Length: 404
Image 1 (cartoon, rainbow, N blue to C red):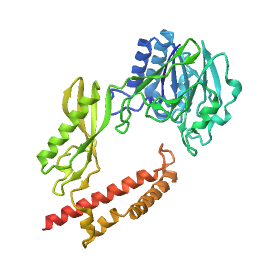
Image 2: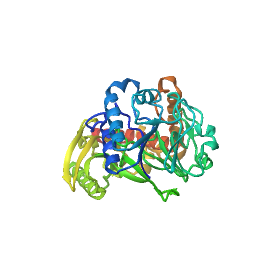
Image 3: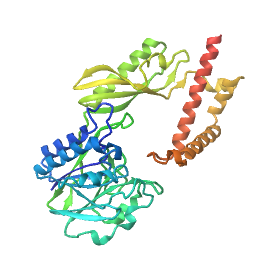
Image 4: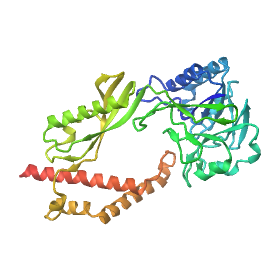
């Protein structure tokens, strides 16, 4: 049996560089038909939200009909975004089987495979759904494919938290998961996040697509194979500015680094690059003199090897000052005091914990309760604290040099 697995389509939400809010759904239909699969599984968040129902009604049902006409069966589960709208829309089609409505586990058989699924009963679910999985739902004579929209690896979450040991204990041969938009195997269990078929925003880096699952002699599942689908791609390209002394050199380093990066990526389509500046930056150089694009825009750079490469206006500054931090810290003035703090691991950790506490307070506030986010870990908070401090120090040193 051949099965196409996908999740987090978010129909009704139009990605910046996609033709429509259902472009990825249309691509999934065509891919399923071209691969001659027997079934398509949809692991939650097929629809963005209730308000999008009218714009996705026609495309969703038309796609389901195409799959039915191609003798491809469709099995799905509801996620936190579409817990109410997806089941309601699907009632108007006889070409899909939704499992586990109301937050209960349900099984459905096609050939040698038993599909086992659970759907969100509401937009938030703080309990672990695998705790309620009944072993009686497993059929020893069939392979079992589990479908679950979940926040994997989390002990506490508003989005059906599960942990690695839950999947080991389930005795299910293979799990396909939804919720996290980055594809790939998670932990050591046989569980894979499908990822979003199209990148929904610039933060969703790397390849996006679907997974092809095949059975072998009806005895076991082969390792799921990722099938790229998204015609565009976001990536972060490091730009080392160490040793550069003027703006012309900085511009050449920017375009040269991106060209080299793109050539080694071997991607065909539209490639959108976010620049990540690293290394030691001369105090008289300023990145905003080179990065003159508006934050939410992109400019075309070049086209090579089937890829049209664009530079995004947003960029990340992780550069250090081309100065002797130790010598600066031994001086007097505000810049010396800041340099001293940045060289002190205990001071940096104190600032990181303050930043983390502020983020946690925001994360736990009612105003942010509807947003999908995760608490900031200490490592990330430490990086942010150092970046903020270095940016301030660069501004202080540049100002002092300008006054001399």
